[in-house]
Image (tube, rainbow, N blue to C red):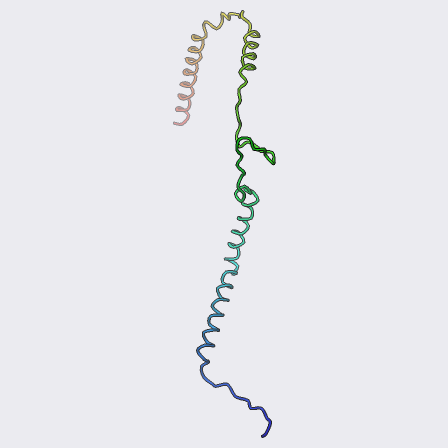
Length: 144
């Protein structure tokens, strides 16, 4: 047997400790990875990812800081106010007040029928009470 290669058979029994630890670690790490991509957890993962992406599209200003301008700085872009600003023009306001005073009539018509308004309202309420008492009396007879 001069040039025949020698074939060693693998020892029967338990594999070596090192090989056992390596395969166990590989199975464990791939198991964790597979565990994350199970259908139930995958849905939650997709939901969270899409929520983050949609949030970024809806609120892009969270990612960028607004530029702070000081007095005398020239803005590079148009700036939109975050709230309404009220700047009163006192001269124009006074002019509009004077115009409104001039447009109001100084003579008015007196309506004499309005003087007995209180008595008419009291009479309407009395009639309403009479009507409601009649209805409640009828309903009481009808229920019995």
